[in-house]
Length: 166
Image (tube, rainbow, N blue to C red; front, side):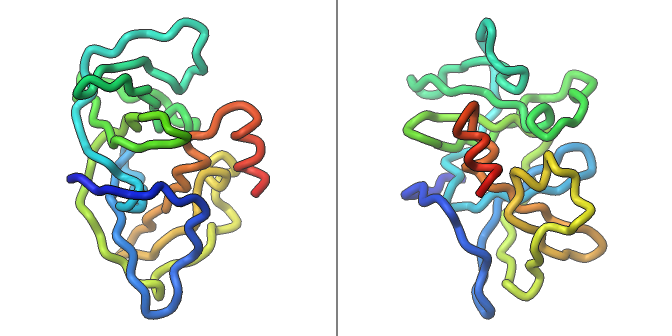
């Protein structure tokens, strides 16, 4: 699953009649979507090298086809407990600020093409940590697809405060 992109920030809400493609990922039973134009590839993250004094969501660095990639745990970023068991470290390759990231997830799902009529702004009861990294939700059959804001998920320090204020 490769997608070239321009990494444009500030993707607006979908307009009526418009469809958007999302790569879906699972954390436990929760379903999240990443705009497909932000996803470079999907891979298994192996041979992680620890980074001393890094924020807890940074699981380490890895070498992906000769490029250093920062492995970021989406569970930790969203305040969820670490996954138990010896599952594979599935990762979604993203770019932000000229740096490569591997967003560690439990499972990578399918690509979904969704129409604007299923889109809604974040629900008022959505946890603040999740709201800070979400662009809204799509209503699916019996569940919600939470659309992640890639810029906010990958923001750190002052950049993170600015992204959550926007």
